[in-house]
Image (cartoon, rainbow, N blue to C red; front, side, top):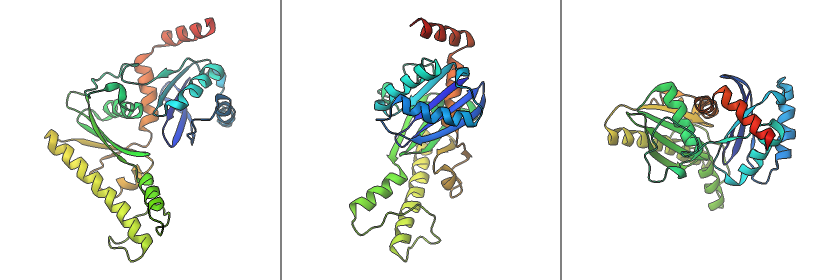
Length: 270
């Protein structure tokens, strides 16, 4: 079994796979100060509820954009799941694509995982839109190469910043207002955030397509993906679990069963 970990700025997702089958998936808020023992107590209890035996896990893979959390997560996989975790980056795993940016090592692991998974599912000429702490647009070209993308502040991050910077503006939840012109402070803020980001999404996708001059398939993932997929036809595919399945696919692409057995043997020897 494989333990896959996606550690984002806001949440960390854990998933257990048996082959390609997802047996369980859980998320907790990301805290760089959390210890491996805290992770273990929480995660093992949840695994038990699903009938998953931690002793059956023999491999692990981690994608993280929070370097401070990495030590505890790697220690977790080693001490509690008998696995030396594979860390995803442009230089540590074979992604079966060229990363054509100035500094490949700086590309977020989650963005690379999304590109790998989306390419496997939808082919080339892709725009992958991820609604996370940041709203990211990642581009896979005609030859299957990762070409770079766009990073914008995330929607919830923008709402929080607006509330903090303007003393009289309340902290609100994102919603789709009935009209663009708000007739109250809350509806005006909701309109600005909802339609503002809708315009950002449609505008950036349009400009990427224009810049490349070819049809581009748009795949959306992340927390608010389903919310915006209903609001615009530019989002063609909704794939909420793209990242976590991408981790399983990257591990399967890079490591055979014999590799796993060798890794476990080396871990015991160490």
